[in-house]
Amino acid sequence: MTTDTSAAFRLHPGAPGSPVILHVPHSSRAIPADVRAGIVLDDPALAVELDHITDAYTAEIATRAAETAPVTPWRFVNRLSRLVVDPERFPDEREEMLAVGMGAVYTRTTHREELRPAGTDVQPLIERYFHPYAEAMTAAVAERLDAVGRAVVLDVHSYPAKALPYELHGDGPRPPICLGTDAFHTPAPLLDAARRAFAGFGGTGLDTPFAGTYVPLRYYGKEPRVGALMVEIRRDLYMSERGEPLGQGLETLAVALAELVERISH
Image (cartoon, rainbow, N blue to C red; front, side, top):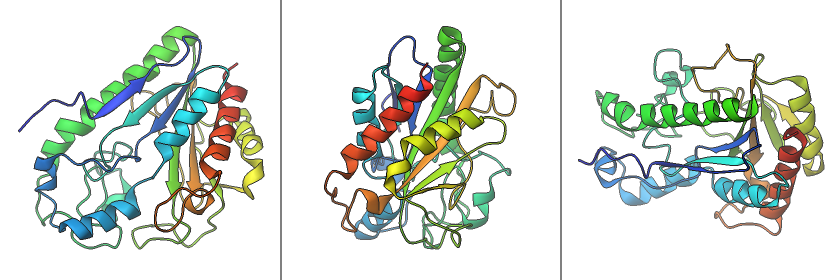
């Protein structure tokens, strides 16, 4: 078994003076062969599960936004599927998604069926993938703090128009753009900038159907110079049910994200 995690994620450099890190954790479908061996789904069922769970094209949206923004943001991109590990979960009992078998390492599917065998030891995957990812993301934020005096993590996600069975809070509104916030790390000017940037997509919602945002644990609830906001894009804005890009959706979303980056870069 290889222990090399250098291909598991990548930090794409931005402008030296940019405080912004576009974080793209769920865009990949890649699963290493030895990790795939621990998943009980056959290949067709796994492909369907990846369709449900992958935030398709979010890496492309972030890339185009970075290329468009006057001050290039940094981009931290997960190059492996969240079915390997989900870097945004708490790696312990604090994680509420453990209730549906979807902690840092998923043991159940989006439809609450078996993904990994009962009793699977998830710790090796956490050690091999979760901790190196967290350490690298922490280092990226630390570098922005040292260089600019602040850091803003913009979490780029997507979600389906119809709730999936795994969702714990799926019975609420599903706006075109959901903005996930944190009481400590999402200041009012950041939230206002996001609402303005995404005003043209039919409405924004706050913390519904998904709440919160990603902050490295070293800084979580402690460092006010670290701002954070989650941008959840409803998938029917830019892709068909078959997974194909729709019209100019990707481009218009990238322009809006670039506008948000511009608003908070100065």
